[in-house]
Structures are given as structure tokens and as C-alpha cells.
Amino acid sequence: MILSSKIQQLQRMGRNTRPAENHKDKGHKNGHCNRTACQSPNSVTWYNHSTRLYYCPSCANTLNSVNADWAPTEFGHALCTNEE
Ligand SMILES: [Zn+2]
Image (cartoon, rainbow, N blue to C red; front, side, top):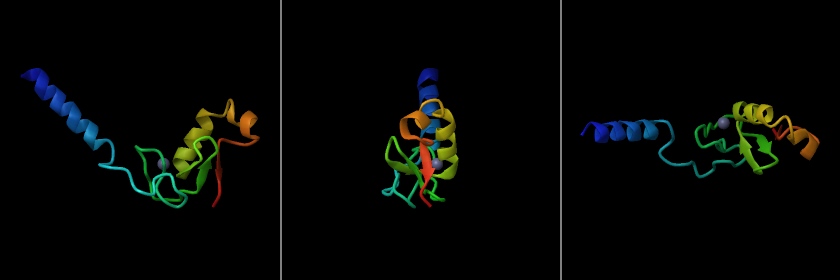
């Protein structure tokens, strides 16, 4: 009984941390950020040269930092570039 209520609590938390469903223009230029947990509609002009989809400035900045060790060698520039 205690375990099942704990599972239900975790399921509720999971639902609250992500959108009910993805936006149709998720990852599209000037649509919604491609990161599922973000999906911001603001300034989605940052092109990811690996996924070939678009991200908001905040997620693009994070992606560029996390991938700074290999992306510049692979692409000759940061992983995400602004196509504003
Ligand atoms: Zn984002």
C-alpha cells in the first residue's frame, strides 16, 4: 500500500516536469526549442549541426559548453550557431 502510493507520487512528479506533449514545431527554426524538457518559444534560432534541429539560446549555450571538446574540431565552429 505504501509502495503503490509512492509510485503514484513519482508518476505525478514525472508528469509535472515535462510538457503533456511535444509542440508540433519542436526543433523548427523560430518554433519551439528541441530540448524536450525546455520547448521554449523564444529566439529558437540556434542550429545544432549534429541533430540538425533548432534550440533556444539557453540550451544552445549549454550544448556548446558540454560539447566544446570535440565540436570545434568536427565542424570548425561551435556545435550550435545562431542563424538569426
Ligand atoms: Zn531550450
